[in-house]
Length: 320
Image (cartoon, rainbow, N blue to C red; front, top):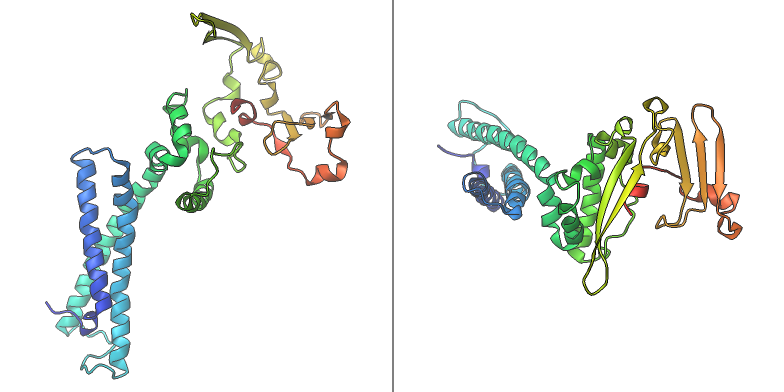
């Protein structure tokens, strides 16, 4: 089986070697992951992201080298009897080249689909978020493992459903990787997160406002700072919803997430100081504005228009 003469050049050689090494590396990592059940976050990274990238680079270098070699042949810089860009199926070299190219392309497409699928799920995994960037996310990952949401994947809240926020999260992730490599990321991670997806599109997928209980008993265990570290139980009865289901979300601590109610507010960068709040009843259109008792803290009308107006959601209370 003979290959076209244009293949024989250093660039195509480099591409072939790179693609072959990447190919065998992918097979090696996949075998380690699936047959030996090795739980190493970096194996997934190399198997589904790093080595496929080198495979693509290698496969691209092969035709690039052939194209450059073909141009030299056409210009007469290389003595050759080959006719450039003429496909002659009677020529065994041409048939062999097309056959090899077709087989490689089919396998490449198949493994690209599989790799893309695996890579997508890997970048959505808890291990990718919590372990790969362990230096950055170690405090958050530790807290997450001991939280009520320990069984919920990070991406379900930080990304959510749909391709639009998936793309936004990965674009933001590229910037975060850049800062991670240079070591310029903030320590600790700044809060609140400015570009977090609205809670109505994430939190309320599980915590339905229509399913809140009327009252809930909460038992918090503390230990006093005396010499015996005396145990102290704090039992609280929390009124979450209305006493009667017919009242909907008009009462209780979650009345503000009633679909007929909108709470809009203005705050500082840390959302600790809230000098201006607007309550809107969507059913009647009535609006009520509440401001800080200290008029010095209340922004002027011109400044108020330029400030960020945020619609109150779950994270304003449950991320303290």
